Length: 617
Image (cartoon, rainbow, N blue to C red; front, side, top):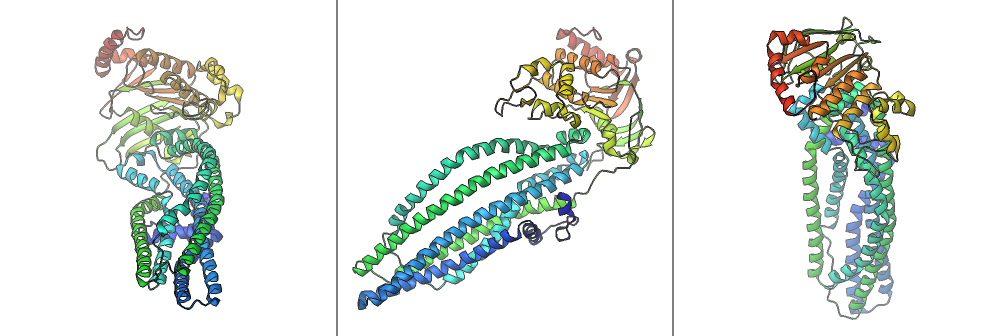
């Protein structure tokens, strides 16, 4: 559906939309394409509503004139016309209010539908962008504005149409005079009590549906957030969970929409009843005022007519100010959203070669710097990783370790140098096939507030419904017994925010992340400092488990801690974006350079924390 929208000639997204007028044209075309009949009804009822106000004013004027004449002539024939005018006024009042409520309901349906399409467009575009784009602060500014405007675009169209209706109403009533009795404010207040009572019933009836919708809505918003978070997009790209998450979001969106519309339908039904009661009460007030006039208890004059007209016109002008303010306030957000959707091209440079198995990854003279920066984060990096290698990359914080990993993964595009896989330049590879052969446990891996089943199976969605395989993975990461104790077993949600959910410790989440990588059965597994926030004992257990689980894989572990590196065949030491040393543990210790100094410093730290770490002590 998204591709169809992108290809639609009337809504091209390959040209930037900058101006307010252009953005309104875009949204009007989109709304008309999705809901042509509803949109035309919306315009039609808005136009009718704008005509009802001057018609009502005219009827009231005629009523006052007849009453005045009747007070002096006392002709019974005028009473018939009086009753007709009152009935017409009542009907127009009811229609005016009903059109307003019907338009609001219609607008909600249009807004949900268009919001759905715009979010899908935005998510699709974000998934096409390279991770390095999220390092650009100007991109984040545009993205934040775009997210704020996902619903406001349709709202602006509604405001624009309503504004035109208000202008028509002003011209219609500009010369009409109305008169009212002095007791009208009190009587109108009393007449609203039945409507307020009915609306209270509506709120009570809709409470459960609203509460249920909010449960799904929180999960929906969490899922939405995944498509705009750098940390989430890395894992989504590597594990290829785009379609699953899109499908999950669609189901949640449809569920929330149906629940909201259900409440809206209740609202429309009971508000209609409320309007009948309200207008009936007002009709009774009108009859009461007529009786006052007939009894010569009410003075009719130009003062009251002028006062009434001025109050209404003042209110309409106030609406114009409010609508104009709203239009200009949201224009910036709408332009940001459409600019992002239309300007954002696919950053991926996919080739066609399908990787079946990774035998080697090699970098030659690689340089990399972040967007809008002239400072090289990686400088003249050359290394070769062969199948089965156990490699550790160490260095102080900010030395370029994680950036190197992202470049190896193809998440960052190189400024200079060459990256090859099995001897082929990475630009020749189909990136999805490359990601299928790599598993990564990122430092900021996603803690999905979903079921245990999903948290594991996101590593390989083919096993989503395979309980046997998932339990096998849980057993290998030493969490099976814990999961079996949960009432919901694999369906247990890993968050206390949801009913019957649970929370895991930091170390348990690390194991979940390892399991997610394990079920993928990849050729290369990268561990990117996920233990940085753990204590030394927990860190030791995670690294021991990592090497145990992936003993037959090519592994790359990244850390600023020296302890676990002795488990590797090759240790690469980085500083200031360069590889300053590399070799085995014994070779690096004999060099007495960077690695030796880090070893000596951290060895004291491990001893001070009483960690039984045989590779250090």
